[in-house]
Amino acid sequence: MNAGIVSFFEHHIYTDVRGTIKYFRVCPILSLLFFLFLLGPVDDLTKLSRKERENYLQRAKVWQKTDIPRMNILAGPQNEIAVPPEAEVLCHYVEERGEVIGASPKFKCKLLDTGEVVRIKYSRRETFAEIAGTRLLWTLGFYTDEVYPIELRCFGCPQHDPSKPSGEETRMERVVKDGIMERNFDGMELAQFPDQGWKWRELDRIAKKASAATKAEMDALKLLAVFIQHTDSKPPQQRLGCYDKDLGWQDSGKICTQPVLMIQDLGATFGVGDRRVGGFSAMYYKGLERIDIWNNEKEDRFQQETGRRACFGRLTSAFQDGLMDPEISEGGRQFLDELLNQLSEDQIRDLFRVARADETDEVIFEKGRSQRVTIDHWVSAFKKKRDQIHQRTCS
Image (cartoon, rainbow, N blue to C red):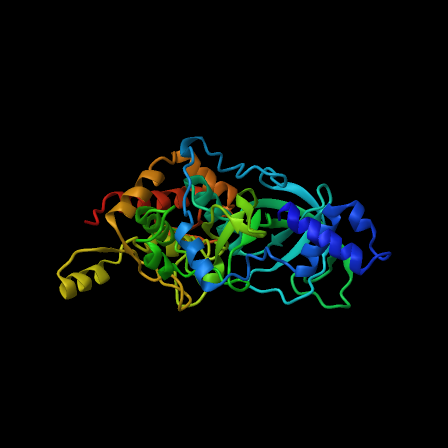
């Protein structure tokens, strides 16, 4: 706001309410701040118009380059709450005011060392899958949440059910051995209403107009969702967001200079896609191992109907607006193929070690006897699916 407006505002505030807020003449900066307060919020990026949101979608990135061979999958993203795998974390339970949404048990907890409030999930295969999914996307350069496997010592925790406690439930010190800690998104959601997220079909609509993401990158993200069997892909599981470092101001309003499209919940992955999210949706080796990357039946039908050969990934969505058997371009296949083939054997092994994939108690029959699924099994399944992408041509 220019000096003339400040001077006009200062004069009229002083004249009209002399003696009540006379200090404003002494401190015009405070006068300006008070004036902006009276006008109400001008920086709410969660109440965009449809046109504003569409503009952000078209300018959003889906991928950033990472040095894949040097990525430390065990350590994960480094920030103020990052801890080594299975480290003990101390926190104080935070009472929820609203209903807890989702199938996986979860609650909020305030870290004793930093005071930051984080989300804790526990006791489900979903927590194992979420670690594997987020670490893989982070390593390859796709945007996702930052999650850490921990042993939690929770003070003031409900005795029986921290996720949905009763009001009379005794609060006590509890230890959660198989928990994960999720960092709050370091930025803002860009939306017309809370939890709007984005639909996968919106990627197809904006592909020709996108300025920051290529069709190859978008198709690579779709193919990666197929690779990990991301079955719970309804819009709220994805986020159109803006990191704090990319927030700015223009015409007295907050703007995002570089929006991103990210997946914010990967709990129903590394299993088998189905019409509903269930026990086989997360960290289920037998399901993931038997599902091929490509939907050959759909490809044959498409060729018969159109005369054109195309690649379709094999993925069943648990929800109507989720990702279902997406068409993948050759550019998208090559893009993901090049990323996946930079992963070393040790990195793939670390991916399943940090996810605790050998602690699901899943049993398979092999060579005439039953045995528990091991890290070696998961590594073999990962490489098998990677080879299916590498050996295909989609043009």
